[in-house]
Length: 203
Image (tube, rainbow, N blue to C red):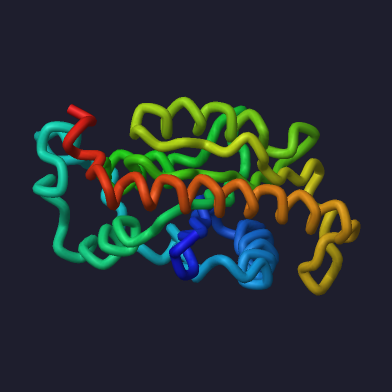
């Protein structure tokens, strides 16, 4: 593949006080950097402005001209620059946090023809119900979700005091599979967007 490292945006979805998300994100970001094929950009939704009230316009119709607050310009640019995404998400009431839905809804073309992977954590389901619902949402954004994912059931038992998985071999193997799929899809779709801009065929 004649592409240097792909730009991977790793998004921490939870904004809840006392959240565990940054621990999971830090571990996965280390795995992504060690993989050697990605430049990692960490996006923490607790640190960005995401108004819940959307303007009276459709991002599908307006595309990149969609009216966003000026303070969102940096975030939008980082999403646009990404070749692939990983969403680190908990499960709230059998679904995903409102914060990640708000991020998705404020954007459209930035997701198109790019792969999205998931690292989830929760109780007995490991956050997988949130992931399955997010797959439906990202499909509407014309994104491709990877088959591989990483999940931590009863996450409070899965990490030690240093923030590392208590069963690192299993966790690291799952992360590598996810990253390998993101690298394949990210590279293939990067070339496709370069040769045929997706906006020309997505209407």
